[in-house]
Length: 121
Image (cartoon, rainbow, N blue to C red; front, side, top):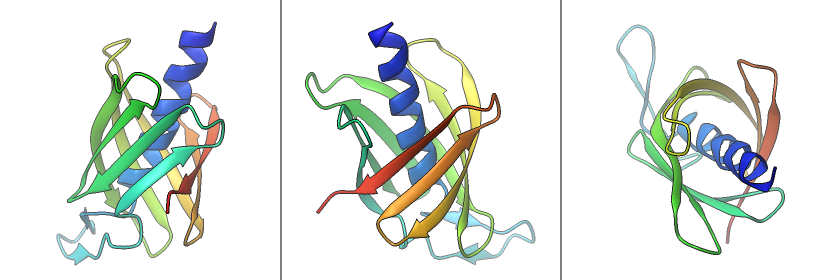
C-alpha cells in the first residue's frame, strides 16, 4: 500500500514539474519554462521532483530511488502537460497541472487521481 502511495506521489510531482519548463506551443513556438524550473516536493514530503529543460525526474527523498521521469510542456501561461513514465510500473501516464501560485502546482492524472507539488527553497 505504501509503495502504491509513494508511486502516485512521485508521479504527481513529475507531472507538476513538466508542465512549465521547456515547453512548446502547438504551433511549434517556445514558451519559457522558467516558471516551474527547479525543485519541488510532494504534499506528503516523501518525494522530490526536479524540472528543467523540458524533462523531469522524481525521487524518493529517503532513498534517492528514481520513481518516475519524463517530459513536460507548457500548454498556456498556467497549464502544464506532463508525460510521466513510472519506473515502478513501467507505464506512461499523462498529467495536467495548473500553476496555482508561483510555488504551488495542482495536478490531475488521466485516471482521475490528484496531487500537488510545492516549490522547495
